[in-house]
Structure formats: C-alpha cells, structure tokens
Image 1 (cartoon, rainbow, N blue to C red):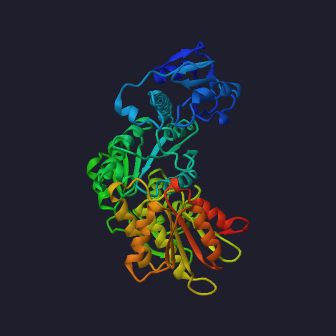
Image 2 (image 1 turned 90 degrees about the horizontal axis):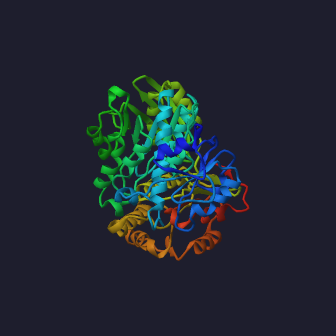
Image 3 (image 1 turned 90 degrees about the vertical axis):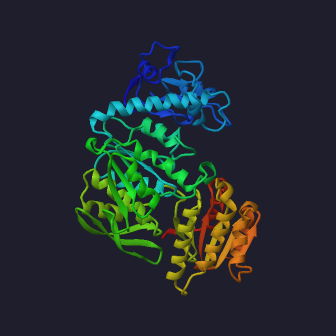
Length: 496
C-alpha cells in the first residue's frame, strides 16, 4: 500500500482516531490475520463466525502494526469505523456478523481501498475485473502472467474475490503498480456492483453464465443480471472502457447492450474479434490453437489441461492486447503460462502411471462437465497399455437450490455418455448423481455411492490400477482434495 498516516486513513473511512494523534504512518501491508502483520502494517479487526479480530489487536500491535482498523475501541492506536445502517451494505458482510460490526469494518476497508486506488489512478494504474460462473481464478491467473511482462502487476492469491479479499488485494497496489487484476464473485444482486465501487475497473471480462449459486439467483437470467454489473460499471469507450465478452455464451454476448464501454468479443464463434481456430487437444488434454486477432495471428500451445481453458486464454489475450502487448508476445506468454492456484486441474502422474486430476477446489455443473470431458479426452488418448481406465470421484455441487437434484442427475448421466469407466459418488447429498448414472444405461458396479471421503479413499486404494486416470471434484465444502492427497501420498509424482 502507499504510505498513509492514521489520520489519512480515518478521513478515507469516515472514522475517528483512538489512542493516537493520527501522525503514525502505515508503511507496511494491510492484514486481517494478526499472524501476518509486520512492522509498519495496519491490522483490520474483522469479526467472523469463529473468532473476532478485535481480540487479536494487541498481538498485531506487538508484531509491529502501526494501528488497527476496528469497529470498537481496542487497547492501542486505532481508527474506529462508523456503524453501518444500510441493510444492503450489512447484507454483504461475512457469515457470523451478529451486530453489524463486521459490515462496518468491511465497509471501512472498502473505502480505504477506494481511496488508495483513486490516488494511484493518475500514476497510470489500470484495474482489470474478471467475473463468470466458472474459470474466474484460472483466467485471473493467466491475465496476471500476461500483464506481468508489461509492468508490475498485482493479483489476488487463489479465489480471493469477496468483500474481504477484494479490497485486501487492491491495497497491495503501490506507486509502482501498473495493473491491478481483480476477480469478482457474487452471492446476490448488487455484490459485483459494490466490488466495482471499491476498485473501479477500466477493463472488465465476463467469461460465462452458468448454474453456480443458482439457489441464490433463481435462474441463469438472474445470474446474468448479476454478472453484468461488471460491464455496467465500466467507463465509456471515450474514457477508455473495454468490455471483454464471451461470444460463445449468448447470455454474456447480450451484455454488450448494458455497457457504454467498447466491446471486444472473444471465443470460437466466427464473429469473435479475438478467437481460437484449429483447436486440438494432446494426450493429456492440453489445447493447441491458432490465436486470431485484428493485429494478426500466432500459434498457442497451452500447458493447462482441458479444452475449457481455450476460452480463458482468449479472454486473457484480449486484455493483454488492449494494454499494449502484441500478438507474438501474447501467444508466447500464453504458451509459457502455468497453473498458479492450487486444486484447479492440478494434474500429477505417479511412478506407476496413475494420473490424478485434482480439480477439487470447487464445483458447479458447468465446471464438472468440463472436467469430465477432460477426463474422457485423457482416457481416449491412451497410455502405454492403450486406452486408459478412467475414474470420476465426484461429490456435492452446492448452492443449486431447487435445481440440485436435476443437476446432479444430469452429471451422472453425462459420465455414462462420456464412457467414464468408474463413477464414485461421495456423500448422500450427491446420491442423484449415482442414480442418474445407474438409470442412463446398463451400468451396474460402474457407479458406486460411498458415504464419505474415507470410504472413497479406501475403495480407490484397493481398486485403482497402474495407468488409470482419476478425476477428483466437488464443492469446496466437501474437502474432496483429501482423496487426491491420499492417492499421491508417498508418491514421487510429476506434473503432466
């Protein structure tokens, strides 16, 4: 963060000073985890479901924090944020905010981030926002790797994309930062608009509209309305605003009518300005294609696994081209880009040839379909003994509301249609997935329902054979990565 006095911070958040005259200067990072606070830092006391950050204020100050951003007085120098009365703002707070103090601290953190971004805008900082039902994190990672070649770039670790992680990431920017790449998520209408007010983007990319959080939004059209808040927040074309939209998704392409920014369409559709032609997958489902742009064409060979990464790569390419990269630079950097965030198509092969696709970070119907297609492609490509036996270890896809049973049933049926060898469904809540597979064809023991992760691990350890390929995927709450970890424990596997 740029250096700010506690008085500056109090002004930015509309708060008051406590146990300080406001002159101490914050020169370090802004942290909400007291264990990460260092000399010169600012500690943000966030009340949560299990712990209250205010209880750790003294520890943070002992670790070198200059002050605390807090909702109530603490022992030591602090900026006390004002209470939040607006019901919508309070609704944005994290789980466990019983008295509104969490919403107040988050609102203060957002105001501080906005103040810093506004100060940095004249120095040449460009804010890039990315949203979509799936692929946000992978695309954000690709954009950051491409833009890193053009100048200092800040992006969040993993899926740090909510009312806490978003401003925390924005506050990583300083006077040297040229690009701030932010991932935007939503649990309801107005969430993305609020994040855009925290750090106003000049370039916004919308990847897709799927079924993630269908329980909250009610329909894909409702999800589209929420995702489109990103393009509505962009400046006009005359002021440099650019909306990167997926031409292959009709609900995303239709967002062109909701923005005054210049629209750049990406995808495999012929009308896309930045598109992929001649897409081919290799034996481990890595895509090669020709990147076609108004500035020219160049070959790309991705190191990422799965055809779905082609769309992510095109969105990243469009952003980089808008910010000054040429086609050759973009193609070379895309071809060199690596997976950054854990448990997202993390492909590792054991010495005995068993390949584990750990895509267990999260799941929704669209991302599971993409993962199953990747698994099927890797099985078809074969190994030393010919076609590989494929395993799909799948669990609950959460937050689907009334569509949950139908969505799980459809995934089970898709596993059969893709000729997946074995389906292991983990947990009673995912039972419709097992039932769908059993009803789709003549499957018997090819699909099995196990009660929990431990049972899945025991089954796989007993039945997986050399050269098998195993996909592990479910919503984050299911912790299915334990299955992948168990399969790789004690193995000296190599990334595929």
